[in-house]
Amino acid sequence: MNKYSKESEEFFNPAKLADEAVLALSCIERGSETSLEFLKGGLKLCDYMMHLFQGIKAPETEQQKWAFRSVRDDRKALQESGIDIDKELRKTKEVRKWISDLIDDASSHSQAEIQSIKDYLLNITMPIWQSRTSEFRERKMKRSLIIHG
Image 1: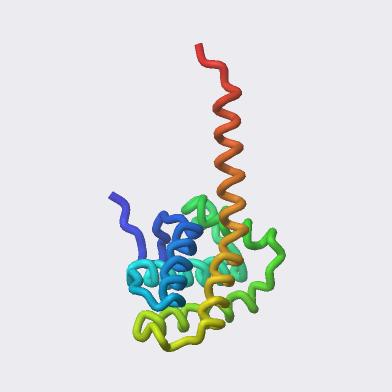
Image 2 (image 1 turned 135 degrees about the vertical axis):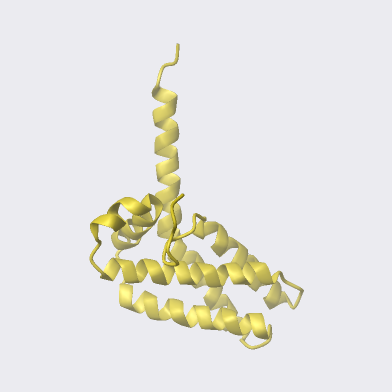
């Protein structure tokens, strides 16, 4: 059985984590109870995004080229979106800190700050979501073009 280092990525859907975190943040905005698991998913998403941004800046080794295709595709989608990597890395660290503050105390940030967190999570995961959706559609179309029989 293969051993994976701490740096290996888990297989998850960043868009789903973003949706769940936004749902939890909306509950906080309304003053209702929210699931801490959804907010912790937001922290996990921020960690993943920071890992992607740092991976974009560093040259890719031969081992990383073959390790995780989904991570490579996510990096490529972010690169092609034309975002400023340094700016987004700083913003992601700030958003991660804010989410961590909200886990500790739900009233630690204003409505405007919570709204900016929600907007950021959706905007930063949009290129990944679009990439994965188009890849899924291409695979589905290829399968439907194959004649069975």
